Length: 60
Image (cartoon, rainbow, N blue to C red):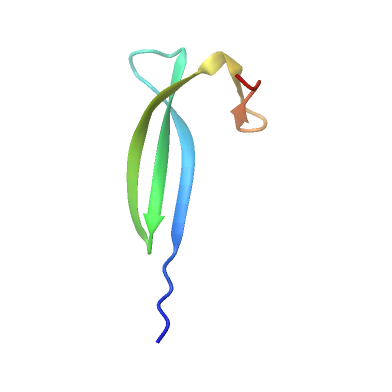
């Protein structure tokens, strides 16, 4: 019998309550329907976030 496992990784940002000028970067990992969410300990300036494309602007 063949086993099939499903892996999904989603990266997203979240507002931090103490600093509204930075967005924290998180990863959500799903394996066979079980989810885990971890912080990547990185931040992104909210002023360069493009809401229409749901991604950051620029390449730096």
